[in-house]
Length: 116
Ligand SMILES: [Zn+2]
Image (tube, rainbow, N blue to C red):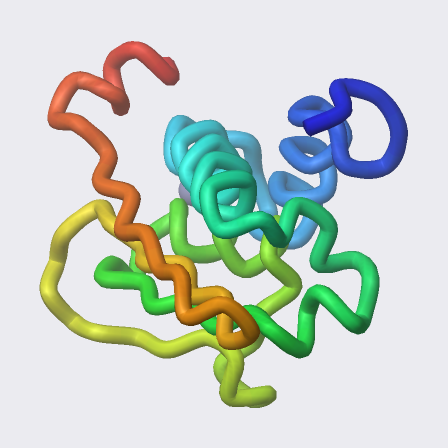
């Protein structure tokens, strides 16, 4: 993962806070979760359409962090690339359809405090 350019942590956090409406711990957690998930399945740049087409994301929360995951992954409910499972858990699963690789990233209980 490159730390520079359009997909650095800071750039994505700014983009996410703008789309979500405010900067909050959920944005920091969500951006980190999504960056990790994308890295682990080998789709680090879903700004590129050929990567985005291989990506499906399941989110298990409908709070702030879900917006950040949406921003970072470019997956959308209305495009059927983002799926919502109402489990109330700060977790998201990232699926690479081309390789069938999937990872579930869960935020630890203390991550909200750390993010703040
Ligand atoms: Zn928020």
